[in-house]
Length: 70
Ligand SMILES: [Zn+2]
Image (cartoon, rainbow, N blue to C red; front, side, top):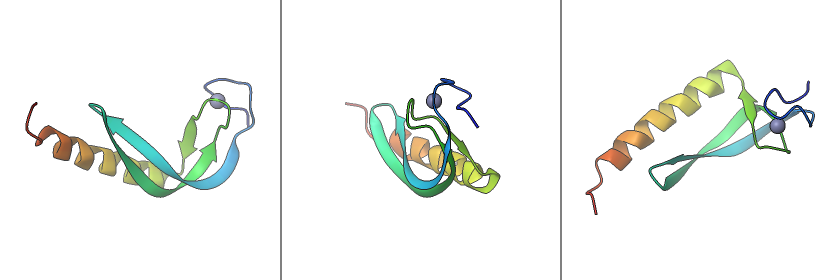
């Protein structure tokens, strides 16, 4: 399957640590399984790992929002 985002590269089945950034802070969600594009970094995760990524993103946003404003 070609990447739906850039259309130039084949997606590769893989398990990777996927970074998530929010307000300049970055966390990494470990071991997400899905199809990854090496050209643009797009990923199509399995449903379970998509949910895990979303949950981790929500949790991380809450942590960042509780940080004192500088
Ligand atoms: Zn792509």
